[in-house]
Image (cartoon, rainbow, N blue to C red; front, side, top):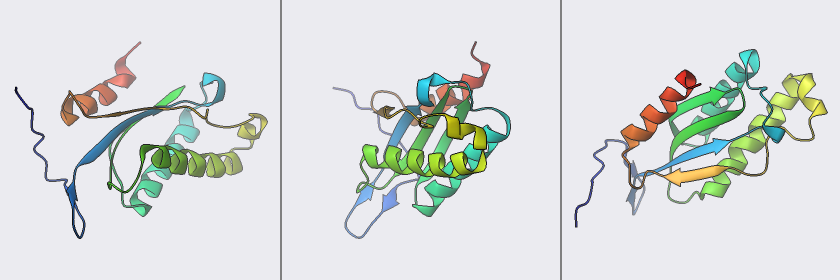
Length: 138
């Protein structure tokens, strides 16, 4: 049996544990509308980075497409993936809908659903490259 070991200096050290948890999230605006462009996309990136830093999480890669967001994030082991999605989507929705009045007409900014995956069978570098390549895809 062959195992691939991720070598990283980004291990998170707590009192009694050492961890390396990285999640790849994809989430979309309600009805997959292509609204994440221009100043809205720029502000969303600032908000996501600020909230992640506030919570002690590290954004490894982030790509905002017109109709979805790719986020590769490193978190503590005491945070479940559903909490990550809830905290980031809830916060950004609240702030963006207040700052961009045209978003008020949407029933919600984000759908309740999301995709999440760990860096299981592929390396973290592969996920980072995949996210970086999103802007160049058709």
